[in-house]
Amino acid sequence: MLPPSHRIPKHKRLLGRILKRISRHQSSILGSEKMEQQSQPLIECVVLGQPVPKARPRLSRSGIAFTPKKTKDYEKMISSAIKSLYPEQTQSITGAVHVQLRIVFNRPKYMMTKKYQDGLVLHTKRPDIDNVIKAVLDALNSVLHDDAQVAKITATKYYAEKHTPARTEITVSKITQEST
Image (cartoon, rainbow, N blue to C red; front, side, top):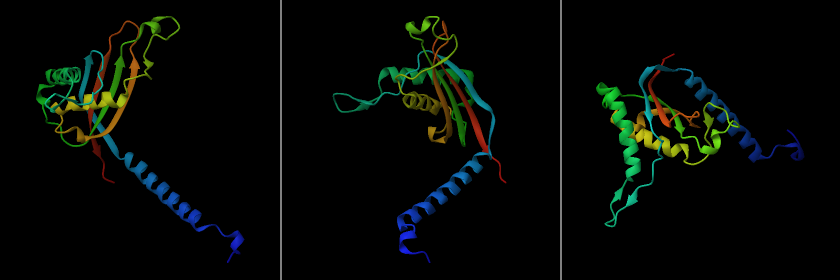
């Protein structure tokens, strides 16, 4: 047995065990991700128009909560675009899905100069990407049973290419797991 001056304190030994468990758990999670397979996209849709973030519910004078008109209109625009492209898909998608979003905002005038590249430019200003995702997922409730089915989301926000309109590109794929 080591003398007391050479022993590792109990809290550090405990921390070491916890870190080992976490690393084992993470490797098992990463291994399970490899088992996921995506099928062909069930929905591929491009909705033209400036993306709108999900706004907080407002209260009327009588105390009733409501969603602001701008948010409702954006959700309706997405839902009607999907319904017109895929009329047979109304709430028929079940199981885990992967939603891929490319959120493209109008390019500001100062970015129209030669100083900025022609293609898509990453958007790092407001609105926050998570609020736009919420609005899109709520609109997808017209084809999904519930937006809780979304097991994986990939989203990126950009400024549009020069002289190209703002848009939201949506892809929904089913996730299947292989049994090993």
